[in-house]
Amino acid sequence: MKSKITLTPIASVQNSRVEVEDDNWGDVISILVLDPSLPEDALLGIESFSHAEIIFYFHLVSDTKIETGARHPRNNPDWPKVGILSQRGKNRPNRLGATIVKILKREGRHLHVQGLDAVNGTPIFDIKPVLREFLPNEDVRQPQWATELMKNYWKK
Image 1 (cartoon, rainbow, N blue to C red):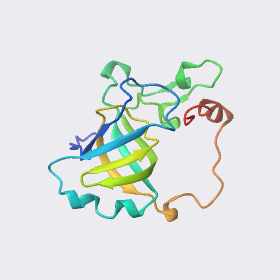
Image 2: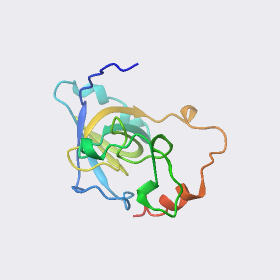
Image 3: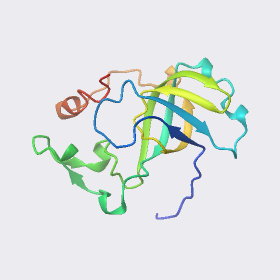
Image 4: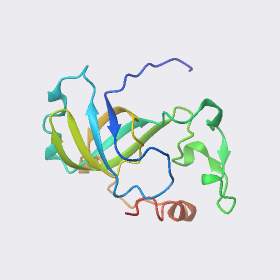
């Protein structure tokens, strides 16, 4: 099952956040700068969508911080121990993050977005427009600890 996959970033993040923080990502404005290896028209039409899903790499997480088993989210002992794949922490085995952002505008090779929870310099692996049909068409459920954890995450 173990095979090596090589990914090349397609863009990078420019924003004012230089340190990883757990909360207050809602008003963060980022510019995703398309890599020179891709043509500018790779972004053509993205501005006609309201939101995009961004797949990125938690590049500041060191190998020694990677979790593969269970832990308390945010190391909070008041929350249950759950597997790393049952939470959205950055210390994941492949260090991949995924966030749905609001598209503000596109200027050539620059995509301006709001609400990306990635720091300045973060490599971007993919940008996908959000289509209603890919969102759940049923109620989404989650445990209470997850609701508590996210209370201030998108706070502006």
